[in-house]
Image (cartoon, rainbow, N blue to C red; front, side):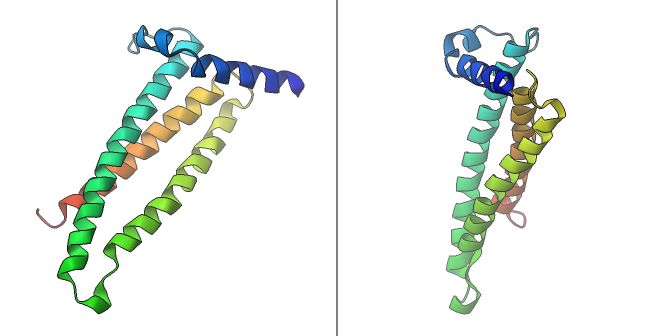
Length: 136
């Protein structure tokens, strides 16, 4: 068990200290597990940036919706905020469980990061739908 912990911390350390190496990787042709994991990390970071932009746009749309509603019907922005706050831990736990397909192995981090990128893109699409509203 100690050995698995050592492997996990080593992989985490390599990912954390390899930004120069990450810039040199051709993610379309990644070969090593470390390169594939670094590419998965870059992909998740890009998806997360898209999510943040979509959330900002959706929140602006929900605030506008609240402005146009009578006081007793307001709550669009609060509902979106609460949904997003609930969704983030769901995504993280769902993807952590997906990582168990390779628990303790060198693929585990790549699987978790790939899952996060996939679920984040799905959520981004949902947020974009909210921001666009009915034909906006």
